[in-house]
Length: 284
Image (cartoon, one colour):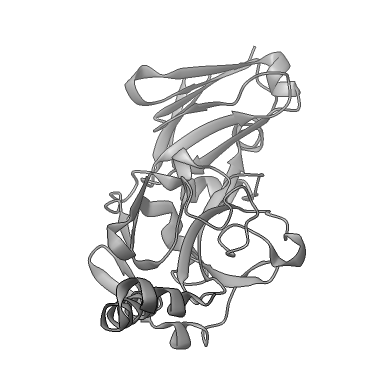
């Protein structure tokens, strides 16, 4: 029996008619538009029709959408993101603090589903396409979300608010390099002139290999390297680890400061030092 027929008989013609009109209004509200705001400034606003005219840069099966960084905002703004707050219809909300640090390897994406609603999701950078277009938020299940909002997803999105960290002071991304008692102050810009930047899996943006930097400044292989950071945190790389396959690199964190990371190889867990202030190189 058609749904409208059941409603008319169960609720009466007038009540049923009002219910159907309200339901239709709710459906339209879900597709009314999307607004992206950065630090209080509206950076993008569009209804579904206007949004579909914007070139997409994200594809997952039959889904098409936009990466928040690169597709909507400049990719360079990713590093300074402190919070992403997503608002949906009916008061639904999702807040993600320090997305780069808390969710490495994931990036924020906006897309429209088959019902014409805007959806937000944190997705893997190398997410494979799902067969037949099935994927998170496509309304037919897939991706473990069954077409519904999950811990890192929200449907019927109306607003995305991005809060960025204050710009660091000039030279804040610097550290002292100590080699056999000699001290030199370096910033990541200076490091970039000595060592070509590269990329590693699950890390946004450029990284600078620590081995290449030490070899460029010391001229030979060290016996040990100690990285010192915030609140006295220390990580010492011994000779075996230095010569091993573990990735050792510096990068700029979400607050614009220097972060050291050691990842992969050697059977060790991932390690890092935040807000690097000093790197000590011993040559025995």
